[in-house]
Amino acid sequence: KVNLGRVSIYLNGEDQPLFRPHRDAFQARKGVADRCIDVQFFEIKGTDGEPAARGWVVDHGYFGAIDTSASIKGLRLRSGNIQVGESDVLDQLFTESRFNSWVVGEFHVLDERILPNGRRDHFEQNVPFSNLLSQLRPIAQDLSRRCRQSSIRRNVIRQFGTLSGQVAHNLAVMGQGAIGQADRKRLERETVRELKRMERVGAHSALESDKKRQFARAVHRYQVRLAKVDHRNEHKTL
Image (tube, rainbow, N blue to C red; front, side, top):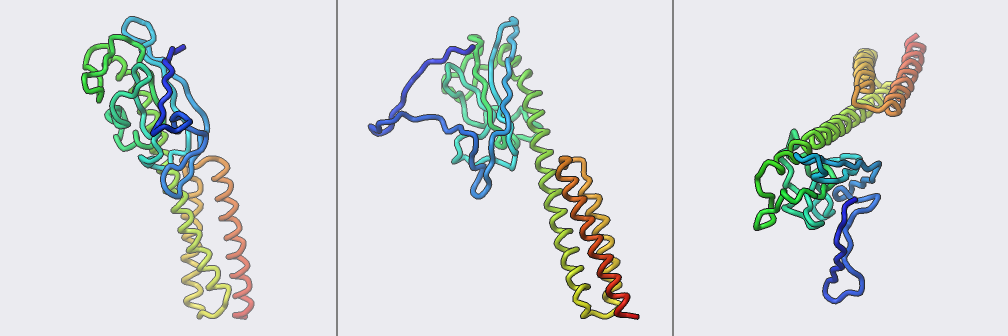
């Protein structure tokens, strides 16, 4: 248990005190809504075996850098329940520093040997603080992996959507029957290639099982439509 002081802060004489902006759902940036899926809690041991810090990290969609206006981005450090430094104080722990702006979490420093510097923009560099960083690094690297996987997943979904649009266009053109046989054959070959690409993209390891099944069904529907278009055009040729 972390014993925290209770301080009520009022702004410009308002009746209600200020509260922190955390909630179950939030705007990652304009037009991009995200929500809390889960929360993980951590305890970091000090060099003396006693708790050096306790903290939490929110699991969410990792849709990219969270806008500064949301006031929640970054893995942060607090001492005496007061934040030390800015949201980028732990950037160096991530495999790519930008990923720190994708995450939401904080750690309360308990080890009295870990002291904020005079400006409270960072901590004094000593062995207990180095130990804290070394134990936070695996957490930051796991978060980096989640961010990277989310980025890959979004790119795969975007690629599948582009291919799907091209296949739908080709099928619509072939279905009209207003093009010559040579152009129809060319479009047919192109559509078969695009469908094979869609199959590969739809089976990407970054995708969840439900999404893979959804994409597989979409490919099958296009294959059925292509077969019908081919059959109809063959009868017209005859």
